[in-house]
Amino acid sequence: MPLGLKTFASVNDAGAALKAGGARYIGGGTLVVRAANEGDVSLSTFVRSTDPALSAISVEGDRATIGASVTMAAIARHPALASISAAARAVGGPAIRNMATVGGNLFAPAPYGDFAVALLALDAEVLEGDQATPIEAFIKGRDADAGRIVGAVRFDVPEPKKFRFAKVARVKPKGVSVLSIAAMFDEAADGSIRDARIALGCMADRPIRALAAEKALIGRTRTADGIAPALAAATQGTAPITDAIASAWYRAEVLPVHLGRLLLS
Amino acid sequence: MAKVPIQFVLNGDEKAEFVESGSTLLKVLREKLGDTSPKGGCQQGTCGTCSVLVDGELRLSCLTLAETCEGAEITTTSGLAEGGVLHPLQRAFQEGFAIQCGFCTPGMIMAAKALLDRVPNPTREEVVDAISGNICRCTGYEPIIRAILSAARSNSHHAA
Image 1 (tube, each protein chain N blue to C red):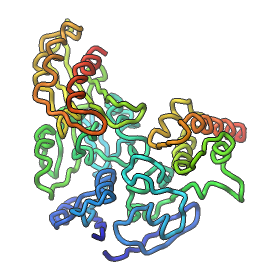
Image 2 (cartoon, rainbow over the protein chains, first blue to last red):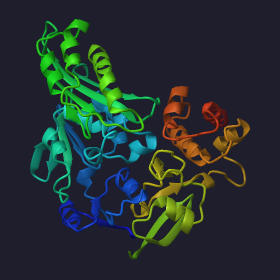
Image 3 (cartoon, chains in turn yellow, purple):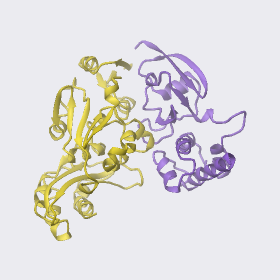
Image 4 (cartoon, chains in turn red, green):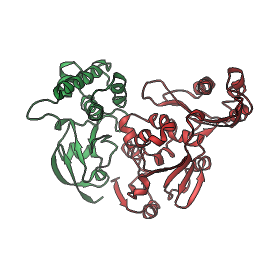
């Protein structure tokens, strides 16, 4: 089927065009053009918007708003986003990072979507027009409502000591994820954990939270003994993917090891 | 799908073409403009052999729609030599046996150029990172890494 590209200045007009059969929104092209190249016959029209707001990064105080068309490379080099740059740098190689967008990453199926894992740990909000949706709910329901277009994501930029991110890959420095982990935690003066939020990539078909591990960390300290209950609970609620990189069994086996290393780092 | 007009600068030359809407930049470069230096490898964004510079930024031409490059400056490996003299990166690849079958070479060289344009004297780690999106199945990468470092040194001598 011949393909076509429709470009709109406004997000609303692009949204209206998406309601046509076979239309798919294109950000950087790393998912959608790839699908077309692979022969996805459900796709006949690429739709995009050139609204400059989609490409804007704004950081006011600790609050960051990142337009959906902002690339991983732009995040990785932004001085105010240094504490999350590791998650942006984890995506692809340099060319992919120059193309892949924040908006696209929210829809990337496992084993992709490493940056969305970080956004889930950061409890970001996903903005569509005036509507703000917590990222956890957004990712769960991302397959519905094809006519919606993400405008931006919004989150509090974490203090470096409160945020950890790790991508586990067999090939360094760039390989597809065995799994990825992002963790936010708040520690009291005595080192005990008051609050924790852990997100996992490749442990389901999309980023998920490790709710049991989060709960098991509350009141504990980041020591080998302190995190042991969290590691024991790490795979609860997960349904890891099996692909050419690793089996579901392997991912479940190594998750506690990597989560432990991340928490103790 | 209707054809659409597109204009951009390819290796310093202005180009104007009618292309099928939704065509990839790779297809337009190779099949419309006859620049076969970017290769079509995986078409998935994995192998990097289609890499080109769009306004100085490394991109995968197999995943870039040509229409999104309207007005852009595009650089491919075939535009690097000047007056029949190879670019220092091309010379370093040739002299350092960094080419075996050659299929990855155009992408490797564009990835290396993107690095050296930004970081003239990179570390080995920076070189490894810069070509991390480019797959080579012949050389084991070491000659390529050495060639890029060597080109960087020759560039800095040339500048001095």
